[in-house]
Length: 335
Image 1 (spheres, rainbow, N blue to C red):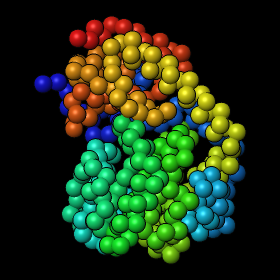
Image 2 (image 1 turned 90 degrees about the vertical axis):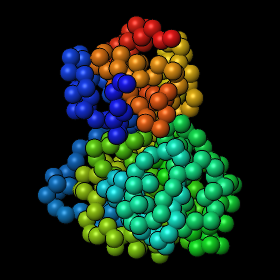
Image 3 (image 1 turned 180 degrees about the vertical axis):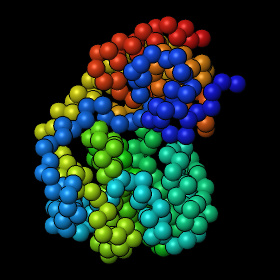
Image 4 (image 1 turned 90 degrees about the horizontal axis):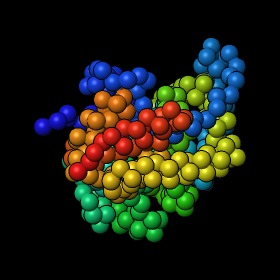
C-alpha cells in the first residue's frame, strides 16, 4: 500500500521517521519556498526589546501597498503569516455556503469550516458565483492553474449582487505576471492574501498581508489585535519589499533553476502537468514508489492524497543538492 502522504510540506521530522536510514542532510523539496532567500539586513536591538511601533507598521503597510499594487496603505493589513488570516477572513463573510476552487491548499476549507460555513470544494469556477464565500488560490497550489482577471472580476460582480465575498490567495503571485487583483481591492467584496515567506524564502519569519477595502481592513485589524507582527518581521519585510532589484534578479534565477529541474524530471520519464517558478507538479503511475525511493536517498517531495499519481517538486539549492537529486532520479527505474 505504501506510505501515506504527509499533511503538509516541510515536515522533516516526519520524513526522518519515515526514512530513518536516509543520508543527511535531508533535501527538502516538499514546499514551494524560494531556496534563494532574501539576505537578512542588520537589525537594531530595539526590534527585539521593544513592542512594534505603530508608525513602523504603517510604513510596512505602505511599502507592501506599493510592492503589490494595492490602492493605499489603508487597504493593507500586515499579519503574522497568511495562515492566521484564513479563519479571520472567512469570518468576514456572512455565514453560509463556502466554495473553494480545488484541488488546492486544504487549509482554506478547514478555516471556513471552523467559522461555521457549509464548505465544499469544486473544480468549475462558475460554481463560485452564488455563495457566501468563494476562495481561489491564484496561481493554484499545487498545479499552478491561473484564473485571469476578467473572469475573477466577473465572478466578484456576481457574488456582490448576492452579498458574497471573493477571497483570492495570491501566495505565489510574485512569480506570475499581471494576474493580481490587488489594485481592485477597494471593491467591497474582494480580499487578496499575499504571502511574504514563500517568494522571499523566509517562511519562518511569519509575515503575510491581507489587501482589502479600508472599512474591512479596520475590522480585520481589530480581530488581529495590537502588535500582531513582530519587530524583526516589520524591519525585514519593509527592506525586502522595497528591494525591486533583488526581486528582478531572483525571478531570473528561479527561471533558470526551474528549467534545469524540468530537464531532470523529463529525463527521468516524468510528465510535468503544472507548476510555477517555485515548484513543479508531475504525474506518473509509480509516484508512490518514487516518493519512497527519493526518501531513502534523503530527498523529500510532496505527495497528495487526492491524486496518487502526483508529486510536487520544489527547487534544489546548491550543486550538492542538484547532484543528489540527479543521482536519485537516474537510479529510480520508473516503469
